[in-house]
Length: 428
Ligand code: PMP
Image (tube, rainbow, N blue to C red; front, side):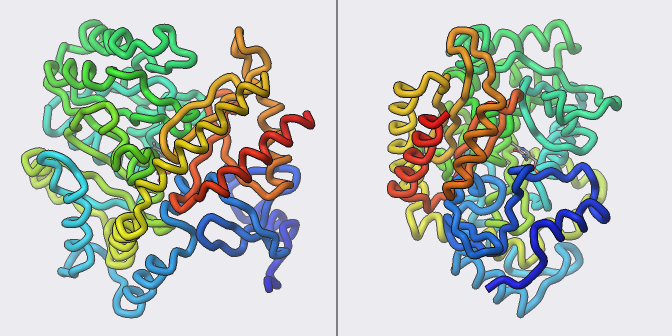
């Protein structure tokens, strides 16, 4: 049993001692989460919640997965140190295992502590390699919140009003709200135009997710990435895939999100779930491109330290041992189908989208006008929490449910989630 401070006491301390920028869900009745086990979270009263969101932010293979916990504890008992100065087997073993999951010549890994750091590094590598500064990213993207990545992020609510030069934002190939619907090739022309009219004709690179996460689970229109990658290559740039949310088996059909568009990037970045809750990020690129960092000394004190890489390696093994990619495909397809039936029943659901266990449900008050149903989204989310189901929220207007559970999510969990959503919407 839990006998720590109450939610009210924690809130009081946060008010006094923590940055006021830190936000949390369920503002009226915030959850004090104290335990986790696989797809479940437990609050301070011992009440269990089905976690249909934490898969991305924290755990890909389940809260406190025993294999991952064991790997972390064993390594912590043996040695925790920084990444530089000495050799250690953990980092080399994980790098080898990770590289084996990537296509083509993507075989060189650099570890970081977060997704922001990974994207900062990827952008710098692209700039160094090409000798160009201009980077193109997509409107509505989220890539991090440090100087460079905040520039690449393209939603005003995540951007501070300081100079962030060198990033151009292309039309978002958003099949639901975008001007060209699902015609990926039409959106790709905007990248051509940005290169022609906004740069010298040469660029450092192109950075994008293949399913936007924070942006509201937006799967890039089909045929978009192949066309854009080809334009970027012609302009001498490198193609960077941000797999922080859509990578690591989540989309079910593929291990990496970019594979669903049939492209091979020059640089891949990842973070979040890959350490199952342990801070870990990575940049993977080719030996030739990786060479640029040797022009100066470049290091990251803790990125890829023994404990974090032991965790990451354990996660990869669990994904394989428990067939989690297959599970994401089977359970995700089933869940999407059920959510689509819910759309037939409830007018408020404007769109159901995504792949595997990365699904989005967009709520609108008018299907024709696609008016964001912001208040209703919050209400349904609150009510679902009261019934024991935690889902996420995103999209520029905050009207998209993000369903990204740990990959061990079952069909029964999917049924429970949909039944609870159905009940809540019926009562509205
Ligand atoms: N890229 C994507 C796609 C993300 O969703 C995020 C985090 N929301 C980041 C990068 C940044 O990761 P971090 O918060 O670990 O810096």
